[in-house]
Length: 391
Image (tube, rainbow, N blue to C red; front, side):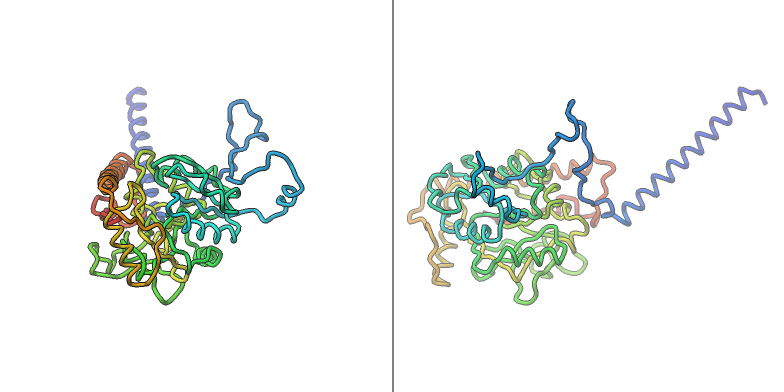
């Protein structure tokens, strides 16, 4: 055989061998990712050296926090240095009409050494200064924006990395039966990355049965109920049957929030659809790392402040007031036609955003050839979205 022909035969053989080895390695990696889908889910190492321009490594400060600093040192500020550092964060979008309710929430969280940031969607900050805690809270103002809009812009993971847990709550939550310290002890002992307090079913506006409080036990992770629109029975382990919390009172661990922040779409400010995908940000199996805390529960009043109050909301408040003898603060006396129209527009926009979010999710799955659903393969499509009755 001529040398040239021998060389060509050897090249073909080598190419075939390399091709087979590469194919085998790729197949093995795919099998491992399917059989152990959560092995790579570790908290991002933010201490890794990163070159920033021509700065020396020792001067680079890659993280921040939301702690207030004095303009000059005083005796009191020196004493504050010895205080226990604040390890958890409460963030809420608030309006002055819910002032009393927000005061109750903030006082309870400040007593547990939380950092508190209030996003004022109605432009009114001055009327909060009569509270003693007002100067200790952080106030950010932007008219007619949602908590998801605020969170995307002011709660980057590197900014809130000092906090172990992040409470991103609505303002219309009754907390007579909720204690932040006891809540976090349960969350930590159960190793939950994403959680929420259960809802008192007799007083709350409920959208998903999994959020309803159970009278026995500290928490639950799933619900079994064949009466729901999406049957929660048998082997159905997807949202909203398990691995699910709703958007009114979520609590995130630090690594979970790093993922959730990237899940929030910059232009979809109502956040509809996000709750169905939060389980992908749990640092492991969402059926184990996502849960609803029953022993520390809240009342979801269902106040619709964006766009004004609706007639539906008036009916809900009257039902609660009549059945329980409660006095609901700031109940509107007259129905405004303009406010009703605004509520309709808000709901329409939120519904459009829900569809956009699902379309983006489906497109992202299609475009990412290397993405493997760590949960049930059939859960990624549009069937996974059930329009919650939110507003």
